[in-house]
Structure formats: C-alpha cells, structure tokens
View 1: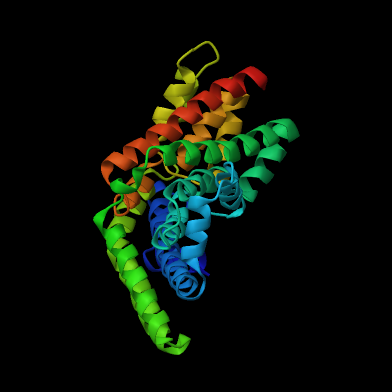
View 2: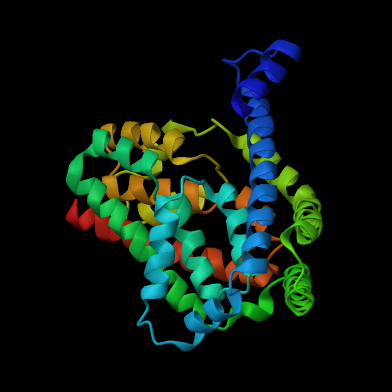
Length: 322
C-alpha cells in the first residue's frame, strides 16, 4: 500500500519518469520515509505496551546476571536474521530494545545481523550462487552479529548512548514504577504509551528524513565499471576497498544481489563481492545519520569500525574457501 501511494504521488502527481534516476530516487525517499516512520511508531507503541506489562526488569537482570555463555548474542543475531529489515528499518526495533533497557551488546548483535541476513537475500543468493555460498553467507552473517555483539559488550559502551536515549529510558522506568504502584489499567495507560511513541517519532524525525534523503540521492547509482577496475582478482586491497566504497551507498539486499552477480560474472572474486554487499546493506551513511539520535559519534565510529573489520576479514576468508 505504501509503495502504491509513493508510485501514485511521484509518477502520477509529480509526473516524474519511473525509469529516470530522479524519479526512482524520489520514489525511494517517500516510500522509505513513510515506511520507517510508521514502523517506528508501531514498534515504539508495542515496546511501550511490553514494557508496561512484561517483567522487563527480570529479563534485563536475567540477560545481565546469568551466565548464558554467549547464547544471548546468538539468539539476538538469529532474531535479526529472521526479521525482514534493511539497516534503517532495523533501527526502530533497536530503539525499542534500548528503551526497554536490554543490554547494549545484545541489541547491537541484532542490529548487526538484521540487515545482513534476511529471507529475500538468502533466496536470491541461493538462486544466483548456489547452496554452498548461501550457507557460508548466512552463517557468517549470524556469527558476525554474535561475535560483534559479544566484543562490543566488553567495552561497556552504554555511556556513549545519547542523552536523548538515556532520558527515554529514565522516563519509561518512572512511568512503569508509578503504574505498578497505582495498578493503572491498560485503557488508562494507552494514551501515555501512544504519546511516548509519538514523542520518539518526533525526536528522530529530522534524522530519518536526512538519512533517507542521503540514501535516495544514492539509490540506484553504483558505477559498475569503476569497481570492476579496482576490485579485480589480483588486487590485494580489493576487499577493504570494496567495504570503504560501499559505505556511502545505500540499498537493500534485493537491490544489491543482482549487482554483485554482475560483478562476479565480470571477474570480481565472490568473497570481495559479498564483502561489498554486506557493507552496502549493513553500513551506510543513512544508517549513521539515523543512529546519531541514539548514539554519540564515538559509539557510531566504534560500531561501524568493528563491523567493517569483521566484514573485511570475512571477505578474505570467503575468497579462500569459495
């Protein structure tokens, strides 16, 4: 429905050509902006309800105090893999987890894996590159989230969350304490929950618009010939260069898989192409812009740097085994 509205607005009302780069970019902007804002409001409201009735303190204490031997990161990464979100669409759920007070490392495990692995990417990968490459790609994406969440948790990065997130967490805990003491009914809680959800949407609105605008400006623009020249098989720096060049791009897995299929057909190693794909869908300027409302620049740098390093190492490994 959102896509039909965006098509009607851009192609029928604005009269732009669907085949043009400008038309595709503006269509992408309206579609993704509306989708993410609706998703953010619904998830924020849902997490507000969960926080109000689910013993989130017990879950937080369980994840923090129990020795789960790293399985909490694996479960978060698997949950990220089965959610059909791109990097920007994953952020609303990430905010919901943070608001609920879940450990930051666990939420980062979800945030890493969610855009990297999803059913669309797996299905397209299976058709394009076969079962072996698909299994390596999917398992490595889950392991990347698991290990990344574990490693990042060791740095105790909660202090680098933005003051806005810390305020949201504090308000949620205060409201829950008051509601529990007064035994407030759901009907009386609902207006406050929806108001808080709308407050979260307003708080990140500018960042969403800026981030999606950056992504829309780059949408569909990937100069294939340039990559074919510099990412060839005999270039030792091909994998890290692929990751660096991919960060300014923005696309989902469905948009990137056909492109890397062309790359591979023209001589770019499959591992290098996969590293490029992971960086495009897992690390992007729009994602960084939206995360700025949630994280300080230092935390964004640590997060992006860690994920980029893992992707580069995975790219070299893929080139050895594929």
